[in-house]
Structures are given as C-alpha cells and as structure tokens.
Length: 280
Ligand code: HEC
Image 1 (cartoon, rainbow, N blue to C red):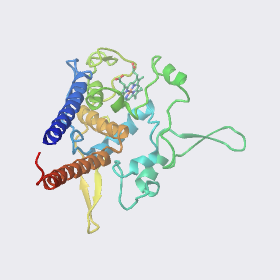
Image 2 (tube, helix red, strand yellow):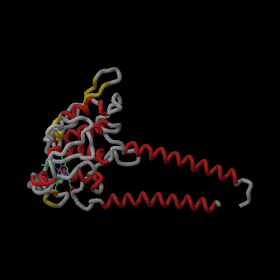
Image 3 (cartoon, rainbow, N blue to C red):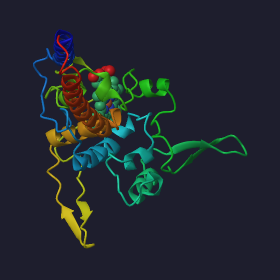
Image 4 (spheres, rainbow, N blue to C red):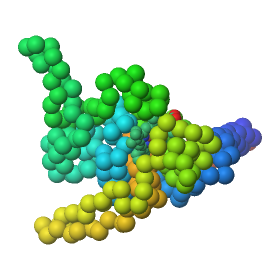
C-alpha cells in the first residue's frame, strides 16, 4: 500500500513536471530563432500574473487611434472593455452596458457601425452602442487586401494567442522595422504589407483620472508615448483581448491547487489512521 501511494505520488509529480517542461519547450520554440526578438518581463506571465490596467487603457488608445483603421477585433464587443478584468471596468457599473466610458467609446469609435435601413434595406451607418461588435474598417476581405498591397490586415482579437510567444512576437514585430525601409520587418525577416506604424509621440496619452474614496480626483500622469512604450501598451491590450478571462482562470487554478494540497494532506493522515493497527 505504501509503495502504491509513493509510486502514485512520484508519478503525479513526474507528470506535473513533464507538463510544465512541455510548456517551457513549446514557448522556447515559438519564433525564438530571430535575433531581433525582444523579450519583455510581462506582468501577466506566471501563475499569479495580472494585467496592468493603466497599460491596457493606454494600449486601447493606441489600438483605437492607430490600428483600428486597418485591423478589426471581431471577437470583441465594446461592452467587453467594461467587463470585470477589462481595461475600463468600474465596479459602480457591474453591467458594462451602463458604463459611461464604454458608452462614450462605442459612440465615438472612428469606424461607424454598418446597419441597414429597415424600410429600404439600404446601408445605414450609425454610431456604436456598447452591445455592438468592433466594426471592420473594410466592407470585405477583397477591399481590405486591395487597400493594403494585396494582403488583408488580419483580425487582432486573438493574435496574441495565434502566434507562438504571442506578446513578445507582437512587441518585436511592431519594433522590428528596418530604419531605411518602412515595409521591411527585420523580426519577421521579410517585406510586409503593413508599413511601420509607431513613432515617438504618435499618440498623446491621456491623463488617467482616478476617484479617491473621499470623492476627490487623483490625476495619474501617463508615461511618455515613445515607440517602445506604445508597442508595449498595445501588446498588453491585445494580450487581454486574446485571453480576457486570464485573471479569473489563474486565481481559480491557484485555489484548486491549494484545495488539492490540503486534501492530499488530509487523505494522508486518514490513511495513516485507518491502517495504524494493521500489519502491512
Ligand atoms: C495601414 C494599415 C495597417 C495599420 C494602421 C496597422 N496594420 Fe497591422 N497589418 C496590416 C497588414 C496589411 C498586415 C498583414 C501584413 C503581411 O502579412 O504582410 C498586418 C499585420 C499585422 C500583424 C501580424 C504580424 C505577423 O506576425 O504576421 C500584427 C500583429 C499587426 N499587424 C498589428 C498591428 C498593430 C498593433 C497596429 C497598431 C499599432 C497595426 N497593426 C496597424 C495593416 C495595418
């Protein structure tokens, strides 16, 4: 019996380690051969990793002001921005449809929502609402490709998961352009249909206003909008769109691990107690 228990424990540990090592190997293999790959210490990595809310807000600003003219976020609706764990979550508005920041963003989004006129069937562009999906800047893929050197800009909702080591991939890609050729991406090692987008000061970061408990408003000065800072922030945002429930998942995972540990301890003592007087 003791042997079986020991063997089971050893096997479980080995399995766990193997799974962990597997993840590490897979990570290392992901596009890591390019010498232009940049690695960032992301706060969302690791067991207890969390998104940086202010970075996500700035990242959203970069996405809206720079990327949304070509790329769509088709798996996202505006209301998701105000979900728990999202960049504009506000506990005063548990239902993000009521969140004024989300409403404002939807209404002022640079790409109009294409609705149809229910009387005539004709196109009817209108302002966005929190329940709308992020619209595509192009009517279809052919138009998208025609406007971009023959390549339709890919959807960015899950890009951070679609590419191996996605966050570092996107970050390195955005900063990987050749100085003398704004269509050549050294990180991907090829000419691309997306011209270099970011240069220092392209976006003017907004001051973030936070309401204190006593009702007064604290202003948080944003960092300088350098190329690197914008690339980092938009990557943080895109990592969230690709895995919006990451924080909830990680915290549940941690609770389960703690629960299992306690259970394992209890089972061990129960086993000792039950077999105490039995020769074996
Ligand atoms: C002028 C249009 C345009 C803008 C603006 C633009 N992109 Fe792109 N993007 C493209 C096109 C076109 C492609 C496809 C490139 C290719 O495959 O050659 C692309 C590809 C990508 C890819 C995939 C790279 C890969 O690994 O294959 C990422 C990631 C990306 N864009 C992110 C962004 C981000 C983030 C922004 C905003 C900072 C942005 N793009 C702004 C047109 C654009």
